[in-house]
Picture 1 (cartoon, helix red, strand yellow):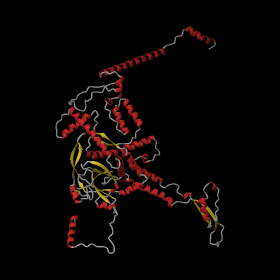
Picture 2: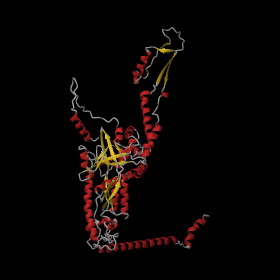
Picture 3: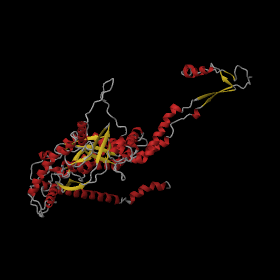
Picture 4: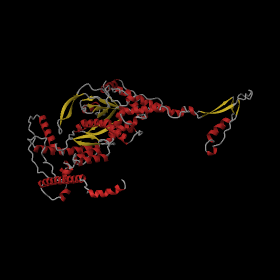
Length: 629
């Protein structure tokens, strides 16, 4: 029965039969209890709320993380390298690029066709300039709005901390949850972390809900389309409290106390004045094809995690229950006297330590077996000290088994040993290779997936059109080496200074300020020679029908160079550059001709034959003939 019907029946019954209050004999009624009722069986509450059972118990998975010797370092490596380096915002359209006008013209044409205009005329330069100025103003406004929002989207923690907590939950449980709060205007204003082990999923609702989705039709504009979706609800049970949530983007009014759907907030308040509308949840998960829940990536090595824990417990319990003494005293054919046993214990505990007792002698006394000496002594009484070190456990057991289990868990995360805290057998080259592999094959794809969710869901809901969210990556490259590479490419006329600054920004994970001077758009030697850049304003990507005003070319010479050079028109500078190039060619030809002449003269000197008169030659040889030579 409804609560109102029950109240009406009670009132009618009271009119017919008068109520009589009962009092305890001999005492007053007991006071109301202040104890908060607990939840004896949380899973029973989840089942009663209609939640889907997860494939693995979240509480058990959290306990495994706390007790495992290999899970924490792998998950911490994911948390640190994926989410701990912050983020930046990249412009969707670079207004300083040479093809910016073409992109704006293309966006104008697409928007016209989308609005039903069948005209194929190319936008004029005036229209492109007006739209470009408008886009620049909107970009500045959106950038300020984004930076302010992500700086204060969490009340008591930073956005990086929120990301780290969600990543830890996702890698431990396979699921992570954000609560998304909106203001009275329906705008996103705050994110709240929800512990993953306290949340369960309800089945997908059968009815379809028509919602508005923002879809980009060009680089500069969104369009709102209507789609039909099936949403699900969520329930959280924690510390004797049960709260319901709705999926992100669900426009329906859902009760936060019982999960029922109402047509309006007024209807919800009329049903229960203490109730309120449920907030939204953004669900992160590692996809599982057979469940609505996510599954942790290490679940395939669950036995390895459990086996390592059991091996460590066996090694720990050895010192408490299974230790073997180092020495045994064996007496055969008799027994130790009653006075010898405490003397031996006292001697071992107190008198065998230190250099003063190095040569101290232990004297043992024994007596024949029997009671009162009635048994005749056989003469075979023997006392023997036997070491038991061979029976002692020299080191922890299952070392190879435990090490292999640690490697299995690390392989499920696809992480090298270096990132798990094991620096054995690593040098500089192998470490760089391991870090590069992990960055390209593991961490960067995870960042891209997270960035997609933020851009497609959060930024699209906020109406952000001109900026995209981008997670920062760790600097795994050597900055000095990259600086030498960039400098060499710039000096070789392969890169312009503007392109070199962009590469430097990717290396150092920071955004360098834009330089609006035109000299950054051409190679450095041309700038130093005073060669001007081509006419500005002519966009090769816009059709020839676009009428453009051609500004006069100007030399791209730095201010310091202009002070040293005489002021001359650009045409004179070009003529001077050509004259210098011609003079250089003449000097090179003169040097080549002179070198050729020197080479020919040297060859002639080597080819000359020394001519000696016969009389002089005979005078040189006569003494040798006289001596019989």
